[in-house]
Length: 102
Image (cartoon, rainbow, N blue to C red; front, side):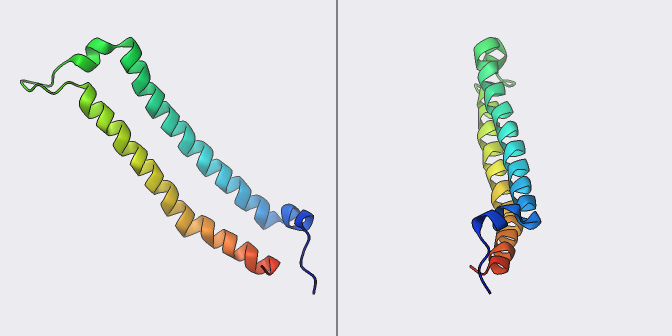
């Protein structure tokens, strides 16, 4: 039995499905990250008084929890990708490798 060629692997429906899912996940997560980041940068650029408002009687401004939120949400998005990659993507890759014999 000969190993399939690269062209045969690229035409395999399971491989095509794998590539589509990976692209969907990465595009969605990238768009969410970009909206988060540039939304915050937009606030800094266009509404500094909003970010400079203090929260209650404390000296903490609204910009600090928003900035921390952007960072934490970025970590969460990274975790979502890692979870997806470890639980689904790697399984699909392993299945294709077994099918190809590599």
